[in-house]
Image (tube, rainbow, N blue to C red; front, side):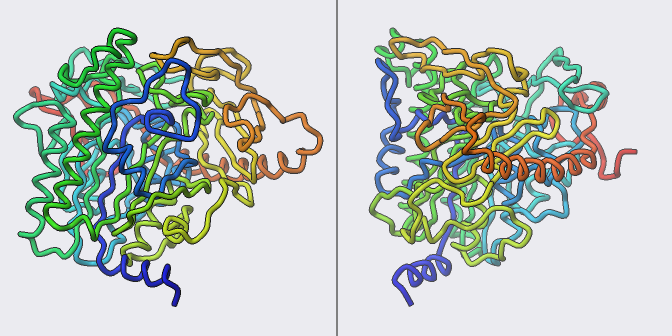
Length: 510
């Protein structure tokens, strides 16, 4: 048996799992191999920067361009397209969630795990069966919707009211906000601190319980913007010199500085409780950054909500128990690969029905030298807007890359190249998304040269379009069955000043 095989066997017998998800983390918000924009400064994230130096980094980690489909794939190992969750995000009035017959990551862990989820959920809240404690976790504390005010813990997102949530939906703002915090934060406080304090309590109390191993998932509120689409931060974390140059980037940096310190507190607590040396640590973003809200995706094209890499490429790392040396896995790693990777690491049930594949051997140094997929692979698509991304070899195809908000053929910032707010030139270079575009993603990470008319690539393009069509058929079938109803405001508005939560019983809606 090889040394790698022995290591993986050892890992599977002992491992705890600490899975940390960072919201809206841009490609350039942590150190990367890409050049920095002229005049821009690194963010204050000393702990995460140091952690990257002793972990396996995933420089070609790809996700969906927004959180609901990314999280659906993260926890299921399946395509969000097959779950009816590939279009946009879940919002207030939708009577839908992850299908109950699809097992999630905590369901597939071996016996003996304490399974806790803290932070953002965003995978359904209309019914009790949609909530995390009905989907495999023993304990949950956090908020159900896409974001919440970092201080008041209230939410006032839009809803699609009285109709199916599609591209032509009518959107209405709530006239008032309601609490969206459950199981923690009763005393108020800055939400990233609140979630972290709950994690520290969970770790401290673990050894007093009967479980053998800990599966702790922390879906951090940061670095998502607050309700007004601007960073919410603690004044004490502001860098005065950065504030003088760019208040927007300084606010985002303050969020990141606080997040970095809190992740350090969690990892230090695992160490002090003598759990860290036996822990598989995974830290990933859920989608690309929101450049307009202070994140940096430079030099990539697009941002959150676009299928260009600015919207779907985000930092990620995996640290095996006892790992001391940093390395890079340059393969294209998809967010749906993480569930089977974690399951293999802990000796869980196999990945039957999963679209993702375990990357544990590559993470452990057993290969992986380039981001190529040797057959067409859809990293995500939207059946309502007919948009998505496909990778094949060194090429990437983008279909209607900005269609969620900007139709193909229209010039926009979403289809262009945003620069960080603290750069010497912080403007966004506008671009136009075509209906079908093809890029050599290894030679052109900024997706500037469209190769769709290249005769020598006609065969490659045909295969990619074929795979796009195959997954689109799956997505449209699932979307049609999802029953994602937009219910009237008087049905979903909390009564008596209560907070958001299940607003329907467990019977099917006719």
